[in-house]
Image (cartoon, rainbow, N blue to C red; front, side, top):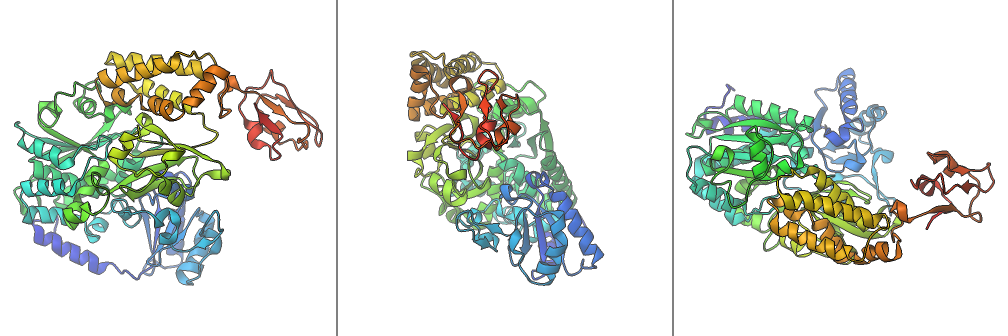
Length: 618
């Protein structure tokens, strides 16, 4: 077919041809090739499969497809054989030949490559039966495991750009906005502002030109949802932006993505060039009067540039600093023109809503939070990775049904939601439904979707100190409450963790937090005290123990603990001696070892290495 596509009829014809050419019964080996799996050898596995298939002359019979992130990062490299949906985990190059011979050609399942349930030890064959996937609802993220992100044909064949087709042929801009409003889509970037209302305000705003921006400046520790969507399904974001631009009346858009995301940048660049070639970007898109161009802007990695006005300042070439909130970007945004900014996940939801309808979308979630949300589930949990769940699911279901619970039989202590500016929620809130409003009521927030699980060994005062330190380093320093408040807060928390805390420090932290909430210029400063306020609210006893008893209940803070070896339990195995980095442990094999408290740096390596509980922390 000639390119670019001249009209809707051309697109429909192309989609029909692509779907007809795809043999759904042909074995397709889909391998997660996102950044996480690449770090554990996925690229080598993909290459080995292609070599072996070429060597055995199986190219016509078997397809190999490198896809985006499948989500189950802790088990990568991950492989799914379609259409049977047989899932193999921790695949290595040495496994390639037997997978082809035994499973693809022989129809035999290889037991040792299957997922094994940690409690029942049952081997599970199919991806959809694995608990990590079984309890998810992967509306936005599901295609990641199916399509080649570098192939626009894959995207079109699976229904891609069908929503754009519908919008251009059946809907007026106002109808598109009304559909998004009725669906109840709220921004997935942190604030949860109603997307349709933002689009409507931007459409009505007066200006010479209007812009749409995709915020892919994902900077939360442990969060990588947006990166994985751009890596695995960039066309879904482009299509969402095209629909938004049509509704708002914009002819120019930007994707602001941090430079630390090389694979996302590569796949996004390929997708934009392909969209231009096929006629989805440029002038008179698919024969309509609609024009739209899309550009990539690389961010320097400043956390504060996740804030809309700081992002726009950076995009303009200025220092990434926020401005006063009373100036609305939908009226005076990029280059002082009306601008609509949504994050990656928000844009990716748009084609789904257009295709399936607002009423269908509204049926998922809670009264005030509709649809699904992608979370990065990390920390002290058995199954780490990206999970997509309906709004309203409980924290307990996420941690225990999907995440598989806490490793080594340890006790769950807290979960922080919403990234470094989120709150730490305790065990008695595990049955809290996860939505924008309930999390905020509990002293946390949805944020961009980070979830960090903590167990009994985590000190909550130290956790607050860690996040405050991160935010202090990332503050732009423009406003005094944030700049000075975080510094003072950090000094107080350091003092408490080192056993030098004072009784009045708790009240001082609370007062300082509320001043920052009320007077900071942007969202970073306003939400920065959340880790402190939430830990004071739910774990005040730990602060008091640090201050009054000079003890760390979690036995974590270095200045408040000491290590020793129990001669009654020590077997002289030498495990502690071998791992000690400062030679603080001495002893002969099969004889009781000694620990020199003067040399000990309290790194806990000996404590972790001892299998006989001979090393104790006081």
